[in-house]
Image (cartoon, rainbow, N blue to C red):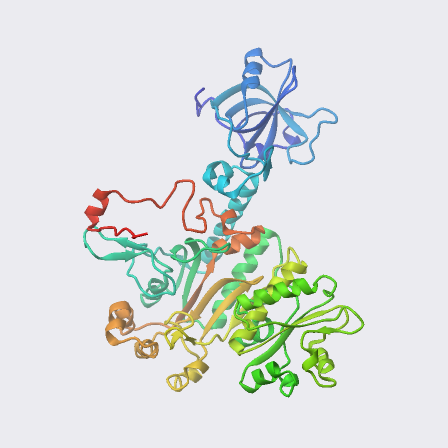
Length: 601
């Protein structure tokens, strides 16, 4: 091993910055060895850094000591090299890399760090041993992060953060940090708790969001706040969820909903312009919650493809098929979706699988029409009177070559199940266009939703959300009709942002807590400091938070947050590389005044 001297070995450029304009220039480069190719009297080394790959050349003109050193080098060695940039030989140009027209004729070489044979390749998705399991990649994440694909993703994330700060700074926002150790307050998911050594038996919580603190900053008069905030939620993981994540968190005073939506739209358009070189529409589509559910069965619909839900309740209200007729009679909905031209792709066996899926997500069953022959194959045709099937098909616009899937149930089941079927079927049929970004705002959410387990009304968003003024007087009598001043930004079927105009009147805030069934003692214990703050003057304000991780995932075209987070957790919330979480030692527990109860299992 040789030692790096910052004076004599100083790097003059990154390898990816060199072009044929640099031919004849002497350079000093450093990085990891991608591979070494020994051709006898000629050795090539592909040198890799975060900007790309550059070929280093050693030939009969190279000093023997330098040549011998190059001969000993293997993949993932860390080296620095000096030499002159020259054009590659005729027929040796590599069009697959941006430095493919040049190479460096090396005359000085240092091996700064040798490397064992790595358990995974740092170059491609596959190595000579075949596909590498994700578990192995995560165990050796520091090697996995050398892959150009991941480096590109993390660079994209860096650019997103930079543009974010630039845009909001230019629009008068101050970046203010909020505490990481906070009071535990109900926010929809389990808190990560942190025991206090000084206050034994008491706990901090890691923030699920900086919600209360950013509202208090508005009360304090800071007017426009922004933070790339780290947040923590102890909930089940999936492809677009990690236990720790970053929010682009903002709050504004003296604004209404339109002001906030316009500010966020401006940010997203700037981001896609600077990072993706893509021009987005001047204004994003706005859709009410009710419309989104009726058309797409989801409050975060993917609008890149059609297959919208069609309500056929009126057409089947007097149907001979009692399942349909009784559903409508009891206040439910009979609706369907149509997969255009899919009759030859969806066999009876495939439709049966979709029926099982529908039952698994809450439906009682799935009716279908498969129009592949001269006569439609309908699962409920024998129950229908003359002309009924034609009437249903006309309403659905189901034609020859199409497949219609129909759900009959209460509204709260029919729409969501068809929404999930719609997305699943679109993926199965491959009809979702690639490289398309459809943004839309969902507005006018219900303020309350009914919780079947507790048999009570609960806040659909957080309890600081302002109801629309027209519902204030009737809120107690008819909670189900109340709509909130809140809004979600959706991109390609994924919720990117959620926000609202906040309650600032302490009497109204108290009323909202009471409507949610909270006692005065609970209100004071959990939110007393916020209610108290409102008594000293609070400007009208609102805000939202955009998920930076999800945004980066979609912009990179990644399938999972693991591909854009440097050190992610897996499904059981553990990190394979460092093997955390791990048990604490007895002294640590003793200092905290904590004992661990072991499960009988």
